[in-house]
Length: 500
Image 1 (tube, helix red, strand yellow):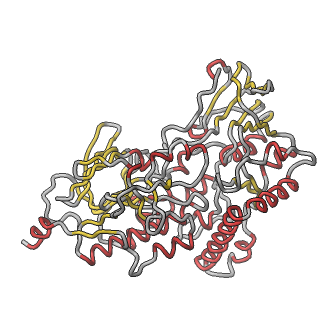
Image 2 (image 1 turned 180 degrees about the vertical axis):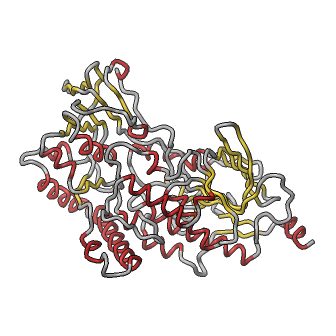
Image 3 (image 1 turned 90 degrees about the vertical axis):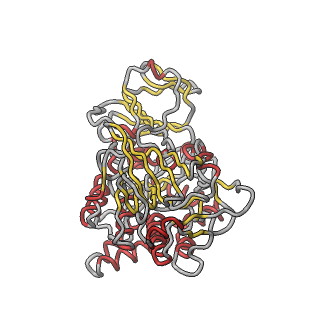
């Protein structure tokens, strides 16, 4: 089955369109190329460069918050010595993969998808693309969104009182000015997540002093930047064999940490505290600055490679302040308790703006789709939306682990459609009422601000999102139940045209 048989069309037509040329989109292209090599495809990228997140974020110290043996692709071993890698190394890895697999030639830059209209009569999507010089259209048989779930053009910054009076510089990590000079200056980093704990030690060696100002603490733990087992296996086993061992080892350790956090939260809190006591100076106020009011993994856990944040605190190059902002002043920030924080530079590491499926407007047979009123099938397709999938990673483990499973499944799904000779596949939610279970299970601020815009999930398979790699491997693997809940159809008009 090819999606372009039997229907006249003056627009360019492709079998598959992948949206996004970042870590997910490049991986999707490689998986599909291997599963259905005869299908035509393009990768549409809204920006002028590939790499997605790893090209966009250029703040000091930018790095992965997951180990590269699980954040890396299943089909391409991570070549670096560090398990927690810096952003430029990850960007090189993504681009090298695209080049070596030959998918970089299929990337079309400056091509933002703003509207996708499905026609059942034609069994195809018509995509409206926005470019710097206008708009264009093309059609495709299958639409695969790999654009992540946050806005690339705008981060989240609260409306801070008095910010206009501040005489220093205010920057957001998502739009880091490469000429920012903070040498010998007082810096305040507002935030407590992965970006903040990365920035503080990275800036501390150059700045006069860096203060991490947080409203609420986060669970933070140190871990080695390298992997002793990887060092041992390197050169002793073939790279792919060693990579598989390391991948499974880290998958199981991450799952153990998550399950322990959920089932024995007090034990996990105690273990985290013991680690902090080893890393921080004697008498440090752990209760105030490192004891969140929620349980571990209600929000994402922060990892500090080689304990660099704690080392900056021990060396008195950085400090922690926990409190509420009253107002910015001309020379810094005043807290509600009256404390004044002097600052020449303020970095608002205050989070992301969520954007569901790249903000694309979806229409199915002239009916606009409201994403919050559909149910996610296996966390990657949408009820009532034909020939569509999205690569969305884990919130409690490495993003790519889930994306690899989804991409492999989509490749198998397209091959299965070819074998059946059908044009259309649609997840069908058969219950009368929509479920009330949110798509994302984190309590992070950036998630709570936008969770109502995401699809819903059901209470049982295949409509349930597990956030569990082992269970998901079972759910996505080939077999009699692989496509339960999906409706496969053939367009009669196209079949007749093909026969004639």
